[in-house]
Image (tube, rainbow, N blue to C red; front, top):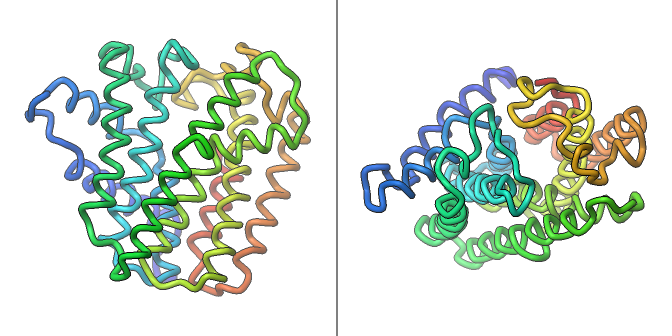
Length: 296
């Protein structure tokens, strides 16, 4: 490819930030405080891993980039809402996210609750308002995918299992089940949403879904390692919080080296799912490398 990976990431991050700025309600529109807090929670933070995965899958599927913009934004809004709610006192009770005060600290708990609610509904509003595929049934499937990934059989369900698991020993299959839902579901959805904006076969979608599942798990394993090894300033969130809260992690179950080995295995298996795509999957391969080998 003519553009190197780092330049591709940087260009998409800058452009996507502007996409988000335009899709979010302006802060001067009533209710101003809610809209200001929504923008605070979404803008100027994060590496946009889920949107980048959507863009990479969209390139593989030869999708219109403007259509992928909307699909990627929908996934990122769901992710941002989940962070706002996860950080609240009734959940993880954290004060730092993406290097700045969490939403409920910067504003208040009631506003943070409404921010999450509003970001979630805005995600589905975007999927309904914009034509993302010329086949209406394909676009309806995109809405279903994001809903399942966000709900009780996806991210919200995974968070419920996480809260119920504090202080309890989990087996590796139990831990994987939790994170396939809590973290992996939305990552899988981001890959599939990007692909659905273009043209892909059922067999290709199945392989992309498998890729998303594997790389989503790898993402969480690496997060667990970084939570033990990196400091708060580097992470942009409170380091060591899971250990302090006696939460089961891949590190607590497997040890640091065991967790690293698992991440490498998941990385290898994820790359194998892309074997038949050729050069069109190069950005997905590079993102898989970034997710597993990243150092903040």
